[in-house]
Length: 58
Image 1 (cartoon, rainbow, N blue to C red):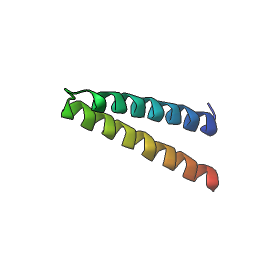
Image 2 (cartoon, rainbow, N blue to C red):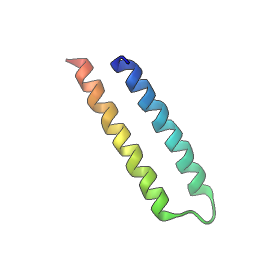
Image 3 (cartoon, helix red, strand yellow):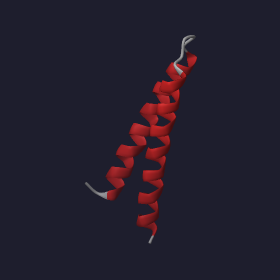
């Protein structure tokens, strides 16, 4: 897998997590622990994408 393809895969996963997060947050009985976990996963993906993008610039 190329770096660009890996970045695209991570971006899709990030978007999927965002959709899931929005759905959970709009539910009246949202679970704070689950929301926090999704936010952590999104942040990890974002960090991975930034690292990969930085390596392609050099």
